[in-house]
Image 1: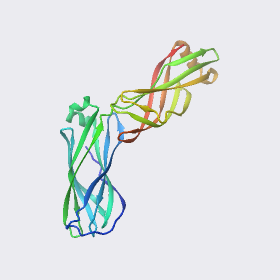
Image 2: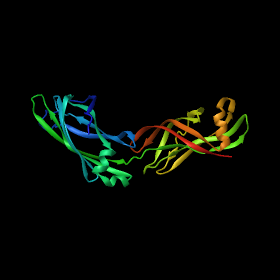
Image 3: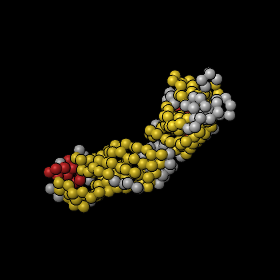
Image 4: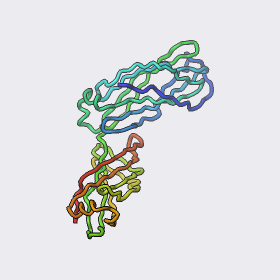
Length: 277
């Protein structure tokens, strides 16, 4: 499994302190942890770390090593040299990201019990090796952990159509979709952009649901009243409503807040929906 090299962003400088090798060893501090790029196939658990150099001269991060333990099983054991060492100025700090790719195709065979869990834990133990201007090296131990969800995706599904009236020229209906959470954690919708098609007719599009909370294994239904003109919507929509079912597609993007930071989830689902008259 390929793990991305550490990427760094210089934050700023502080006052110069004693030289490397005295009582001014570099520090590795955990700033935050997040999950990015979530999907039913896996995601990336990102540890954002501060590398702090209290010495009076610059040092360079030249390599790092770590073991990733998922619950009680070793998932990764890596030693990574940096082709381009990361420089940390005297008295300065650098923010880096340590990404751990959790791919279910590899993770479940290594830790089979995860399939039946909602939450698991990742433990990181290893070290970062720094070099000063004289070529002297110092390995600084690091250890941190994070829980993470066994993410099973989110479901965005059209709900049955309610036909309040139906004539040869048009109809008054209520359409909508449900957001379902099959996971063991709740989340809040920050923004939900959607489009809803009846057969091939774009019936609605817009935004909804800001601030709505969806509990673990819960759902939230969004419905919208709609007046249809069959001259515009087309004969296929009329025939579907008359027959008692029609294809409905809901697509869009949801921006949500989870216990592991903000996520963006795209969705596109088509079902043959029943019509309730």
